[in-house]
Length: 313
Image (cartoon, rainbow, N blue to C red):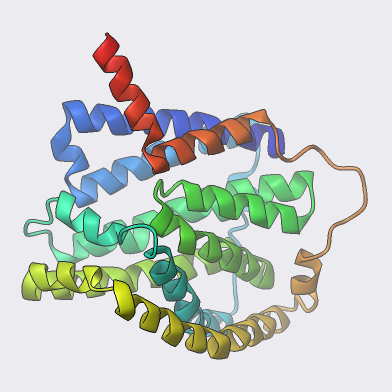
């Protein structure tokens, strides 16, 4: 599968996702208000188009996606890498709240958490989402773009897709960084399992924090998420800037160690280099149209236009 097919899959995915979201909101609101079922069905909608394209391209899925074995030491180091990358992710999360709201807090307000058991919450956020999204972004999209062009462009394009697929600017800000770091892990280990573990650790930790706080007092959790405003916001950005300056070089050192441990020394420098051989065009019209659709949803322009159309009709 090449970049042209990946771009068409991206466009079809976004169209299907938008249609599905509006259908669920208007006709099956209980689905969109359920954290587990809402998340599960969205992940299914996102993965189906790219799976169909891969199967139609006659790709051997496990080989193409890169599900290879890793050494045990690398798995332990991925845990350390995750901890070291968290200040950067939190910094981008907090920084985005200068302009937009905390999306997780809004999600909790809109979704029915009810008596959702911990295992179901963790299954949804810590396992299903990481596995599906890594297959989509670091698996199918990244490998398709890498097949058509250099690894750096493939990394950037797949990270952009991962960011905008969240359909809000708050999560997109740190999802883009996660997308880049996850690609570097995949290259360092040579296995998609590394990014699945990395993504799972991030989402899983948030699921634990969410569950503990919501069970203690849901209002306190919501209020704590909304406290990052004004002067506190500036202080938080300053603190995480310092932490990121310390931990990011250490995270890179962990990546280098992993690549050497897996017998892939020098692979990280390769990612930043572009080969000068002739390649397929990586950014095509379907990719651009899909991005425009995503941004129109994120800004509210799509909903506004749809409302005007309904008024006219």
